[in-house]
Length: 207
Image (cartoon, rainbow, N blue to C red; front, side):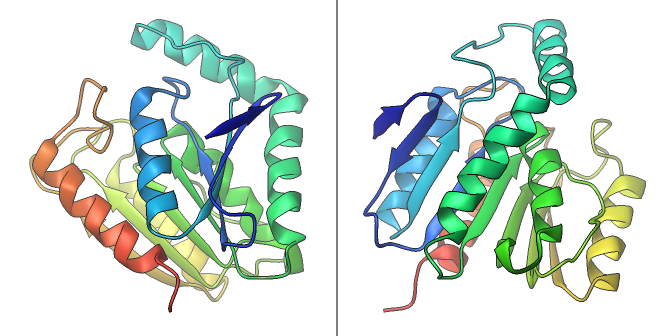
């Protein structure tokens, strides 16, 4: 995996693209591990570092970092630049995000012809706006999650369905927010393994 300024890049340049957006813990080893799995599945992966290398150690610090990133126009600009890079290849590409990253991934669906073909959202998101061209949205959720409650999940799901996207929701009983991130406080190995298998099976390019 190579680093260019604030973007980690991995995988063959001619492979279908995937934009991977990190949670409020930053570009953690778990995020890098996910990137490695996606590359092994045949994807070219871009991971923008929205925190300039910072890895918050507490929820309070992580929330402060996330709030600052959301308030900074440079965050959306960096995400958009990565999206433009993948869209310029002229082949369908996907975006995937965890929590904060899922929230940031959803506006990409409204970029018209430059939108990702698919979104994969882990315990987060928001309804789309704009010229929505994303054809499929896959959500991975933890029932009872206070950070992404059922009513928000329903709003995201219905918003994308109303925009014409196929929406698939996977619920993982008995787990917490961040269940798919190995170094997070909510990690659940069984649920994470199932989610990983589902994601890789879907995003692995056809031979």
